[in-house]
Amino acid sequence: MTKLNIMASRHSAFYSPMICTIAGGFLEKEGLSGEYHVVEAGSTSGGAVAEGRMDVAQAAVSASWSPLDKGTRPAFAHFAQINRYDGFFIAAREPDTDFSWNKLLNGKFLYVHGGQPEAMLRYGAFKQGLDLSDVDDIPSSGGSEMMDQWGNGEGDYFHEQGAFPQQLEHDGKGHIVGSVGEAVGPVAFSSLVGRWDWLETDDARRFAAAYKQSREWVNTADPVEIARAEADFFPDMAESAIASAVGFYQSLGTWSGGIAIEEELYQAA
Image (cartoon, rainbow, N blue to C red; front, side):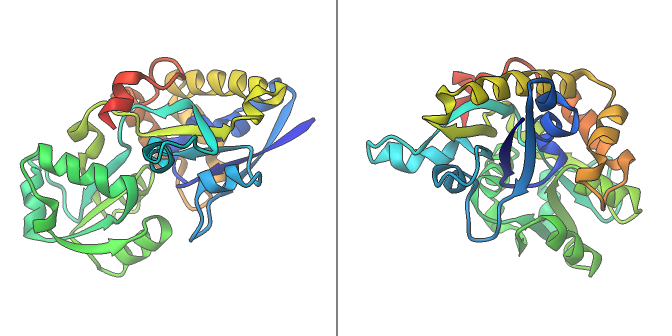
């Protein structure tokens, strides 16, 4: 059985369609196995694919823009869509059923700095009539670092993908008040990349078949069932928090449609 090395640039339930190729048994049905990796600090998932260390990786569509701007072909191709919306949430220390983005001006905002997460957050804020530069910000790379920062009392508002905000709610340490995906609208947020030569192989075709099945399942199955399947990938999170994030992403349409990257959504990015 061929083993594929699969890498995420961010580890979250937002990328459940990719994770569940392994967790849901879809690779195995195609005669493949998968080993899951998360990119290390100072590296990129696209770079790992280009260097041959990874077979498949999750990357923003913008990962290819630099070589394209120079008129050269990128070392990898974006061959499948993962998400049709931004997957970040905004959480607050207290419940707020009347949240508006301008309220971010009233406190310190702990948000993921750099790259596509910040770019989309800025665009979402702009669409809501707010200049993110006017907000008192606290830098973070996100993930466990941000959870620790929040736990240490840093910030009044929190910005991360699921299921980190849902875990805050589960622990009674935060309340989800907004969705960047709802503010931005449909966009080609993240995709799968592979080397050009690898995409011509039978392994690539079998992976694509497994991924298509996984994404359809993640989009339609009971979120509790999905959370149970991928729970081992999130040992520090409650299954109910994972299920809550998955359920929201399903209702937003994050994983709806086919796996081809939609031209309209690519242009929106």
